[in-house]
Image (cartoon, rainbow, N blue to C red):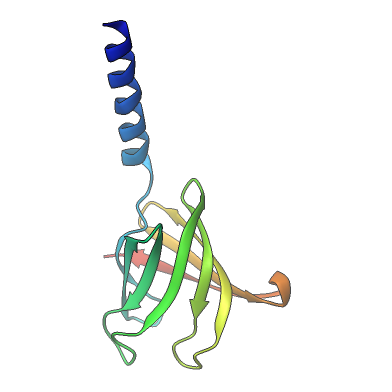
Length: 114
């Protein structure tokens, strides 16, 4: 009996921890004013532009690297160049950055949850 209670308590704590995390999935307003959709699947997350000049274009792929932190790749839709990227979620803000030369040169943006 104690084993069942312990397993139920552990499952509840795991579910609560997931609920407390800031979710990266959803629709985000980019700095350029377009809407980007972030969806989970295949063990990671993909980013697709839903509005604006490049609507329908997939521009990123990320995996979890820590609490509310993600690493992967991000593509500039204007130039089609892909960069190593990282992202972090804090409430309704998503800070994205793309880097070249091993992180020597980086550009970042902050997106806002819709």
